[in-house]
Length: 212
Length: 303
Image (cartoon, rainbow over all chains, first blue to last red; front, side, top):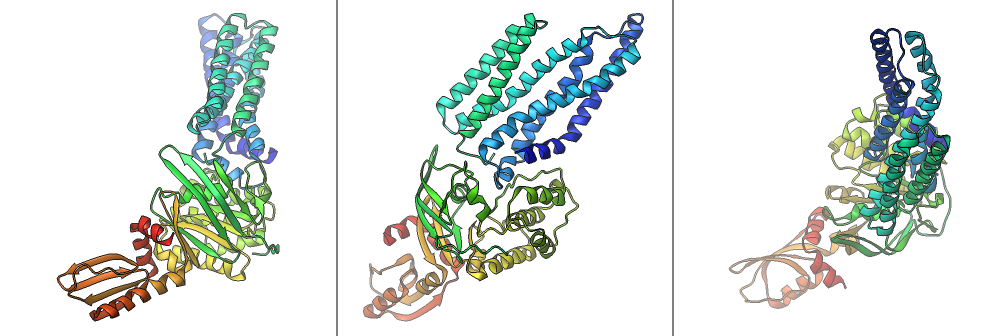
């Protein structure tokens, strides 16, 4: 399983690096513009935090689509990997993309500080908040894929569970927007995202068609 | 093919294999494939050939019945049977942006039993360009890559879904040669689906005809070509009834028939006093076309 996950990460590395490059460019541009406009005032922390993590989320969506298009399951299931392991590869990929982009945030924060002079002290906490949010959105990709697959394979109950959970997660995320600064809310979001991963992985294991 | 794991079990056995889709049902299929056999699964588009192969490879879970490969049940959650299977489909899941070499390297770490020597041998044999990304390879080279990937871990059962479709004659011939060599040792079996009928006479020992998800006929290639004949004769009688005739054209007293029971038909013609009887052999391809055209009729007659 780790072999497959490593290979997928290596395969999508150019996409991730490209996405982070674009995000860095946007952050840098905003830092310069804001400094000019606000008499030396740096960009708000959420601006710096948002773009790189968003890049990780976008790459996770691209990877999800490309892997289906390239019929990756066919290749991976020709070896020793079981559908259970493949299910976890599917749901761990978004985690890895978002986590890697969050790691890339550190030098970007440094760069933005260098250009803008100072950053809000709450930038790191906000960055964590964004990470959880975008991770949640990224994780909705595999869940939507599995709910659709369940419907296509006429597994009615599985499709219902998948879509109901999907709607539930959206409602929770929408509701929690009002309390983003609360650590408790952030932890609740993490719990919901992990549950989303478990549901998506379970739905994948119940598939009757692994050709896509 | 270096792996020799003696086993008394059939290479593959399908028992009551059934898969339902909206508007289509495959099976129930019962089929046994012995080691050393090349079985061609012949049928028109939508007959269920790909679904059958996918079920055998464990990529599609049947609604009823099941498959065994060398005695091991095929279940997606069990990986053991996969070491015995080499599968070439239309889509093989390769990393399209990676070169053929990098894909093969990845597979060498994924598939137990992978032999670098064996892989290199097939790469050279097929003259496969290893340094090109998969999405830049031609259809023929993609098929070659899929074949190398399917053969390099030494499987005893090859499942090939239209392996020669879209290939130029030279590559096609090379691919068929390799497949033929693989089964020479009597331990390996090949099940391949095709609607390129000319492949049948080149490679297959046995033929299974699928139509609308049902197995309408399974027969040996030689047996098939021995029993089918095209016959022309002159007979003035109206309303003649001949056994085994699947096609009958008549212009006045001139008759042209195709029979799948040549011996019986010719005997009946002699008894009826037919004149100017001319018998010609049919190629396996021609017979296959007739069987697919007359699928239901043959199925009824066989049963």
